[in-house]
Length: 501
Ligand SMILES: Nc1nc2c(ncn2[C@@H]2O[C@H](COP(=O)(O)OP(=O)(O)OP(=O)(O)O)[C@@H](O)[C@H]2O)c(=O)[nH]1
Image (tube, rainbow, N blue to C red; front, side, top):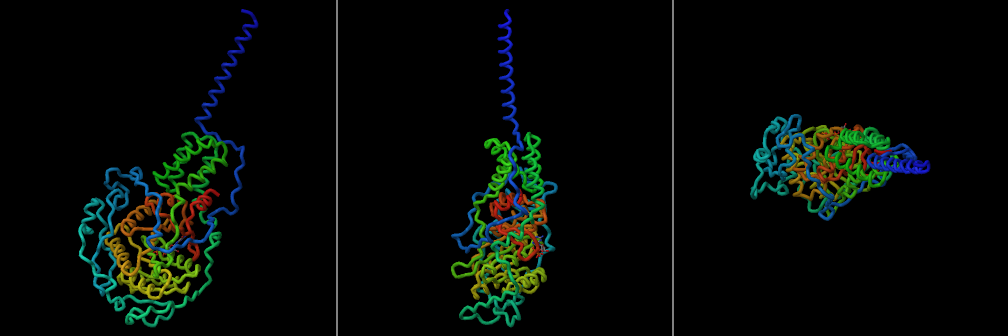
């Protein structure tokens, strides 16, 4: 064999080896996403934190403006620790979520003069109780129930224990006077202190999400921008989402979406990964949901907002903050202190009312909360206020009697005016327990919006994603501090930007 032949053979072998090597590298790169630092990450906005473009969006109530959440995702079985419908060790004593939804329970109204007494001594539902038993215990009528006494026909003004407290120096409770022929004049609102205008004041709340930002936003950015995304990296992404309280189902969805988008967009740089993360997180928050708070009057009647939730979540504070938002918007507000279990709660609400020059209707300790709520709405209709905000007593979602009573509060109020908004106040720091509460409350009173409070004090901002996914109800407002104006509208894009800034 000649030398030139050998040279040719050598060249061909070298070429084949080169082609094989290149093919191998290309295949390997397809399986692993490698990020380089070629592209500079866009500068984070100064100060970071929550920025919302506008003020809190308000809308009139009524059927035409009912929110239409895009979809209510099915309850994922994988979220549950139990798979057979039986409560498992460590589960909350709650109604299993895949049982048939319990409608509002008709409870016979007590006599006018009988104050409703708190039921703390009621035993908690037996953990082993089956849903069917629970239903039987609350006597859900299957056929037309006997009509309960119709609240408007009650001599509400004469009711003992319920009083209307105008802003200052209440002379005589207006309800105690004979029914006026004409509606009384609106008492002029006397604003006792300066209220920050809602537009633009959210700027002041920047940085309040710092704990969630560190745990969730920076955690994810660190992982996605670090370079190779192998299976271990994706497991860490999942762990980060789970630790931030996104829940198993939402975590799986977001991880899948990230994997798909990163591969489809051919992400190569941390900046590109950041953009994908932003898009996926915003999408998971359902930005199309209607988040306007239905607190504007309609059909010649005030809007009625019920504020519900378990003890200590921030109901009274939220009611007061929302009253400020409305007053700052030039609206006239009446507050109903239907938390008759705790005298201090009514005092607290009266203080909020005084600060914004609003009237408050309250009841004596132990009075029937439904009667107080009824009288508050009645007074609001008479005085032509724009909105009646009713603060209800904190109640444990595991106490069937208290939950039924809440259903009654709503039904009784509806005899005066439509309830436009039922805001469920959830404490973001309670994590999964908040979700359990949300499920039970929404079974009883048709929750129309969530207020997530204390987001300033938790690293688990991911609960926002989960609660919307579970209930199909939008988070409308977020509490970001104890200050009187630390209530912000929830805007998915602004929230995600704050997490990733
Ligand atoms: N950090 C922080 N604290 C809040 C927020 N909202 C409410 N709080 C505080 O939470 C505590 C409880 O608030 P309340 O408004 O009394 O709660 P509640 O649900 O009415 O309580 P009950 O009437 O006992 O059921 C108070 O100390 C509030 O200042 C918030 O967004 N952030």
